[in-house]
View 1 (cartoon, rainbow, N blue to C red):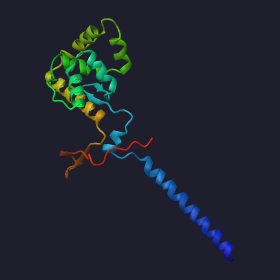
View 2: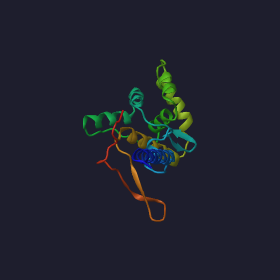
View 3: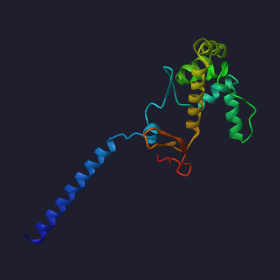
View 4: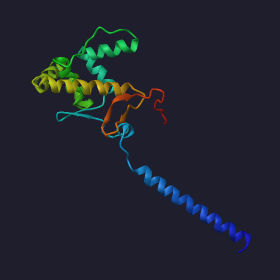
Length: 185
């Protein structure tokens, strides 16, 4: 075998090795692993509460809440200004009913209702009808889900929850603020 044949054979072997490695890499990348990144990049990032899905929180939701003079809107605006807030958002009564109603509907439905002349009243009535007769325990779960969605929408990090030795999630959570997500596009 001359030197050209040896070089050709080595090149073909190197190309085959690269193709195999690329195929193995694609196969490995196709497997979705459990954990915080799976949740962070999931197509549906809703939180299920008693059969309702609390959707992700969007910037326009603060406009909806401001229209309703909701305390969560005031809390957010105070936080943006760096001010201490005097507003309180409790897991009971109309404030949680309205927040739950908004976040269990798509944005277009909420916007369409609030654009009507009596939209605020209609939303308040619909929220009261749907959520006003729920037990406080369920409203507390809605409160946690709403606040979690607000937190996730404004965070630049992915929350990490370490697994305990027995396989259950550890009580302590770590928020790797030193590793913010980078925008790549």
